[in-house]
Image 1 (cartoon, rainbow, N blue to C red):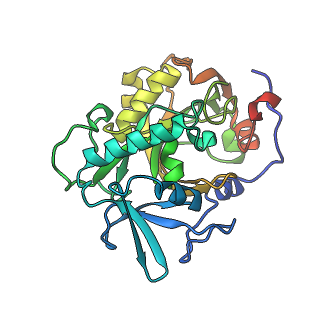
Image 2 (tube, helix red, strand yellow; image 1 turned 90 degrees about the horizontal axis):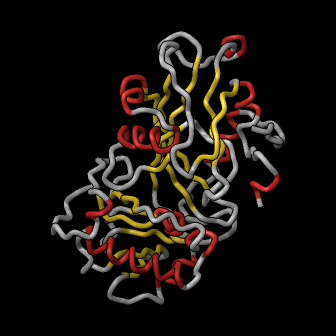
Length: 319
């Protein structure tokens, strides 16, 4: 793997700030001057806010069927919700699926939901983003149960989530070699002898093609548990056998951040973080198992830290 050409070195704290670059003010005004509108589950003003809508999305929703959307104004506060008749997760899922696919096919916002950006993955949306993860499997999203008492509210296409500013979820696992068992990478001289498995994202990826990535990472699809997503992604992306992940992977915490893209789309995310130290007696060679990763290489921590922010592996990666 050829050596990346780095951007200006930054501290890890500045990288965190770059990702967590948006906070919602009481007025809901973005740095670009856009007035955001709350997207609620139902017309009741006590209903949970699921996401935040930009003016261009609000205008588009006003062109949709009046049987689907409810528009409310309380004082100077505007909100949009599903119509009262859409009172089950399955009904909302069908509406979102039809609408997002129609938007894609008519060329709306191709930078987010165009054919090259479409993921064909259904993501769960929850009333409480930090509450119970009780969504069904994606293939059961349109199965009517009549039950609207769950934390799960509906599911929608992954690529369209940033259009409506809803929280999405993912897993990240750093796979490394070296160091004593039960300890993770430290600083300075403590870094000697460690190696981190670092993949190069495939150039066909919808997002960040050709960039360095975490050892194993991926979104959590509807109906799959957090750790089960780690197991799934480890095998699919890195060919790590299930028994190794279940025995050696350790949870290290949860990171939440709110990212506003350069184009103004809103991406609040929750990432569940894991680490996996490869024991010396375990022969493990990370290698791509699907089309999302191009290659793997073991890199020292100093290299990873120095090139961790906006690092492309070739000039074509950012085109």
